[in-house]
Image 1 (cartoon, rainbow, N blue to C red):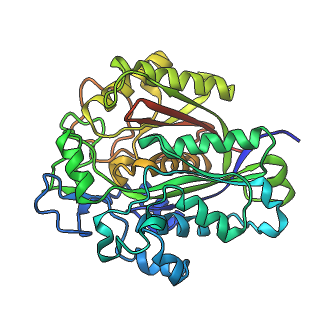
Image 2 (image 1 turned 90 degrees about the vertical axis):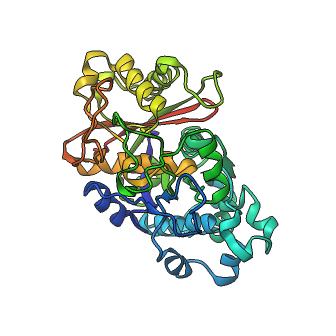
Image 3 (image 1 turned 90 degrees about the horizontal axis):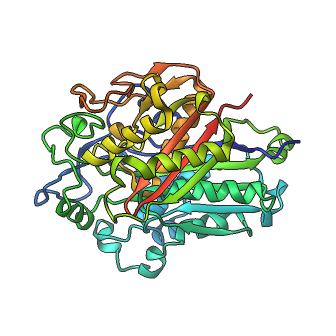
Length: 405
């Protein structure tokens, strides 16, 4: 039997829903999850909008987390834990049937979210809440997992890095199953003010749903989102043994460091192009086989320009015919969770033969003349897709997914 790394479970918690089905339906429908912030009063901030998870989140989480444990978690840790429980259940996993020392938990976590939005609870259990490793720790304890359990922090590419680490540990034969992905929430006054200071965020407060507009001429910055994305990676032998549902294959990946600038990507997207090239080589995939790109697509001036140039550099003339889209147009930028949420969406696109759109693309940037699947989803059979994550600090990641079967 081959040594493929297969995807046997997935789940998303985001502004567009509290489960995989709801998120997928809303992504396909091209809905925006961006609205005025209600977690706190944003009146004094330049940016007053974000893609918050639904107000019913805490009720949802209370059905999946014991009250005492929930009190020891931040809101974003609860997102991750609840999202994981549903992903494990959806994957039909019974850990009694596994050697728990050969199961790992690897998550992308920028921070645990113990900020002012926690309100009066910020000081209670502050050490437990502030631990960067809290998310994988809670998950490992809940399931009795004794294999590697840790976090990866590379800003906006954290969960894509985590998925790559999960691939490696299965490919090397040291694990049979990995719970991977990530969670994040930067919807707090401290970080919004910080991003405003570096002019990174959209200030289109009068039009929340239209604020995230990747590849548009009038884009004015990204919109902060929040949520969790969990992907269950499993060795082919393990998945076949338990007759698991298989959603796709993680065929390979690449991680690179640009070594260039703490905020800006290399001019012309040179580092981005190198990452895509290395990922395709690692997966043994010919460029002609790639049928879709889930772009990092942040709605910032430099990312969208340089990512477009990088795609042209890698795929040449064929780039003009390749569908590319950004889920950030609907979900906002979920920072540490982005690589996982967008990777899951890529897998679902291949599995279902539907490409999610880039919404708000009514005024295309004339310098960016590729097919960004504008405004409406598209039915299209694709066998191989890639998902890009390019982070502050020059931490780049590209994941390569292949349709199973």
